[in-house]
Image (cartoon, rainbow, N blue to C red; front, side, top):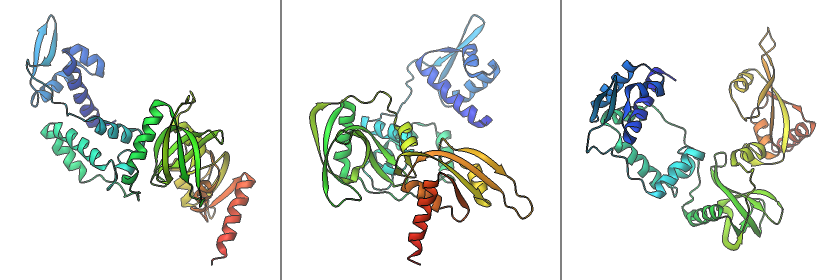
Amino acid sequence: MSYRTALTERLIKILFNLVRRAHSRQELAREFGVDAKTISRDIDALSLEYPIEDKKVGRDVYYQFADGFKFDFPKIEIEELAVLLLAQESIAGIGITAGDSFYAAQAGSVLEKIRKSLPRSIKEKMDALSRVYGSAIIPSKDFSAHSATIDRLASCAVRRKKVEIRYHGLNSDTLESRVVDPYAVYFDPDGATLKLAAFDTGKNRLSVFSIDRIINLKELNERFVRAADFQLSTYLNENCFNGIHGEPVTVRLKVVGVTARVFAERRFHPSQKIIQSKQRRGAAPETVTIEMRVASGRGLIRFILSHLPNIEVVSPKEVRDEVKKVIEAGLKFF
């Protein structure tokens, strides 16, 4: 963390401390791991924006807000707070809060309230940063037509109520009735879509459903017990890769040239580890071999194909054969 970042974070935390109660200079110094003179300078800087009083008690100095001063926290609606938490936990300001989606207005409203609550000097700095920071646009679906479904699924997940859904799968031309225990609603950045992780009672397994393909939903008068060890992030790491779900498989991939540098620097999955790395020597290009335990299936195959011709499937044979089969089928069109 840079000096400027640490200073900004410390000033904000000091304000939050003083909102709760008076704090001594030594107490603040111990909490933030700095000396008393640094705290004095911090208080001097904050006093330019806020009415902070100091009072000597014995050999120490105590700081507090002046009588009658009220720290102006933004008034945040429950719906806005939910959007903020959802963004923090899963989508970080993209996906369902992008463009004309259902939550876009609430996301914009809560960010504007937070912005207005900041001191002028900080607002000016944030405005300057906003002109130099950005992100690439992610193609996303419009979920405004599915807002009722999203709300009902989230409500049933919280209250542990089973639901019956009529589902039109991507690879199916028929509607299927499924009774499921809704566990979590999450944003899939690969497909730019919202999905439901749920226990399918008919198939006796955890499954994933695209919310925009749920045609109808009925809450049942029956409760369910959610698996105590279920964690959405863990489940997705083990059973979803590149946006596609499948059975976990341990795969070794060898890449060469510039692609080797990309694989050495980038983390595609939490389980990824480098097995072997060789630097460029003469005419021989640099190589990197990695190992990952990821979901098998179309997501993994698509990932491998995207790095051709600089990638080799070392193992397992089943994945190598599947990649070969897809390549041969694709060559028929050329």
